[in-house]
Image (tube, rainbow, N blue to C red):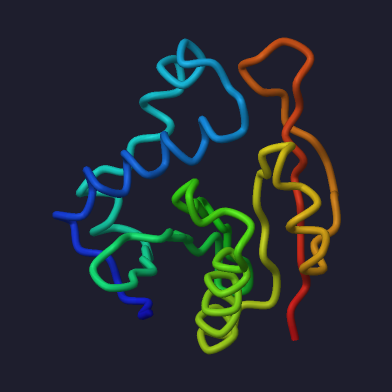
Length: 150
């Protein structure tokens, strides 16, 4: 198993994994299609932001991406796991890699907009809900979460 920086040619594979992973949470195919642009990882995005993928025996297990907000704050944009590997600890492996990366860069605060299905995962890692963001689905809100790191 290895974690490596994604290349812009990984964009299609990452986008497909993102859609499959999101669909795992019982969103309809119509909803996934509505979110297609939001779930697409472009080659330009990979060139611009930090994107790391987890592979084992050339099989993509998952990835995460982040961007700096300012010199102290970073936003976790994405973390997605191939559905066949969800619940096996790979999300935590990716998050630990992410924590090491952002600490080494001197960041102090991590922010993210969580899917409601992932809120507990982030809370178990120490994140706190600091607000909510209305989603495109009526009466559905995304928790805005923060973690202060030392």
